[in-house]
Length: 69
Image (cartoon, rainbow, N blue to C red; front, side, top):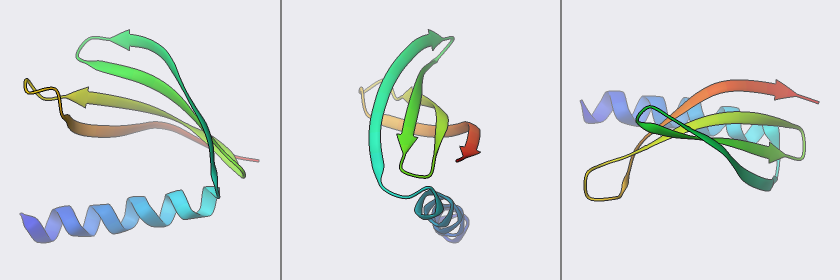
C-alpha cells in the first residue's frame, strides 16, 4: 500500500510541476463531505476537492479539473 501511495504522489507532483508556481487558492463551496477550491498556478488552474478526517486533518485531495493556459 505504501508503494502505491508513493507512486500516486509522484504522478500528482509531476502534474503540479507542469502547472508552475502556485498563485492563489480560493474556497468555492462545500459539497457533501469535501470542500471545493479553485487553485491557480502560473500555467493553469485546478479545481480540488479536499476531505478532512474526523480529527480535522486533510485525508484526501481529489483533482476535479485541470486546465493549462
